[in-house]
Image 1 (cartoon, one colour):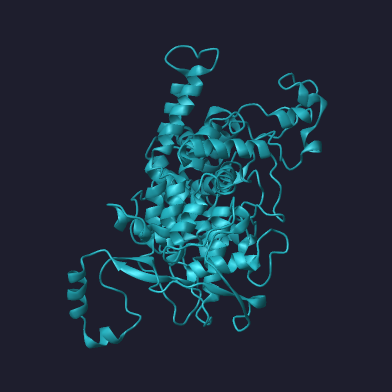
Image 2: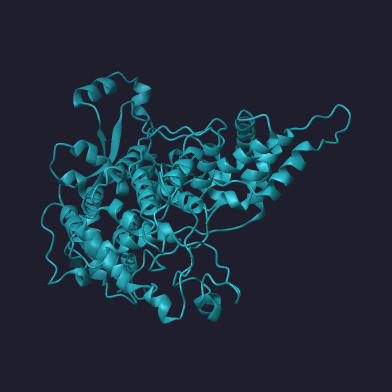
Length: 580
């Protein structure tokens, strides 16, 4: 607000209650609100008597909605997909030969869902993904699934030195948790940030001292019995899948080792040995060499330390980006010199400090942001005319002329739904969504796939066509944001794909079952799809279309009924794909 006022600007008016509910429900669960949830919120906002003048009833009703959403199991599913982009989660390799698959990789995905749902403190979230095997505790077996952060990563089969895979792990670690491009120091000191090649190879030594291992989830005697029952041909098949549940994890090598600096990145031109330790610029004193095994546990502690200047800020920025489309730092995985400066550095510091003080609670951070007046603004960027008395300051200055990119957040940014949310919303409003939590991945391309898109199989070699078409990130590399493309194939998909056709049919059936009257059916369809009632003009258009007859040649029949085509049009509209 102070930055807006410094420019002579004022924030937009508050969003209406229906828009706000749809926005926060998508943001926190990845799903649209149900008709019943909308009605309950509207009723609670007005209270049993007249709305109080200070808005206390309305604020309490909204806060209760936020708490309900944060405590729903769908919250963890929504948050997991955002984190899996950072973790470059995939269930196979990009190669067609010798490709290691991760048939049990879904256990890492399910661990992430569960971690967000129980509000696992973020510092512990970090420790478990880096070194769960090195911490004692009664739930260690469950925590080992967290090691999929690295264990389910890409494998570079043509790289005899193993340094390409180590580079991937360093990049995923430092971009993901620290917002630093340490991997740029593989061949030379970082050109812009104070990160040396010694820093890089110090971290390389940690991963060079770490091995991939598959840990059974059943007792060893049961594993041996299953292995003994295999035929000779099965035993010879090195690519066979195990016939028992297991986890893709890591362990320390028997002989931890340091790595020599590779001069100009060449594994055959070796320089001095780099002791395993943390990045020097992030240490308050001279960095202490890691001494416990590979050093992963010490590395995890250094990253998760409340004194680390980057860890909390990077996560806070990612959560801000989730809610506003762009972070306070517009380069969420690069806080270095080449990254963009924060638009509101004091706000970033404030939120980071409060995040740590809350016990690293991600749910508390969400609550802080979505309960703010900034988040609750209207997305309408219309500049009032001079006779509009609702916002006097905007009569003097056009915000678009000063801040066309909405960097100062003078209105809420309209955003397109990500592929997963759009598909899930389509299944939800048509009454087809299977809300089952967890379990093995499914093939999204199959017409009977009704589970949330989160549970679709993610291939590094051949990504599902739907995901690829709607801007899903490359699972071979860590990703901090998704592009938003508009190409003709997307609209052809909307017109012809079975997902849309089947959803339109189900939506039409659901609406027609509700009432025999066209107007009531249209009203119900709008409530289901857009979380709002239709206007008189929209009702008239719908009635006119539904009352018309098809002109078909003799013997010809329509593929879809009028109501099914009308339902498809509602699902295909921009209003369904965008959130205000």
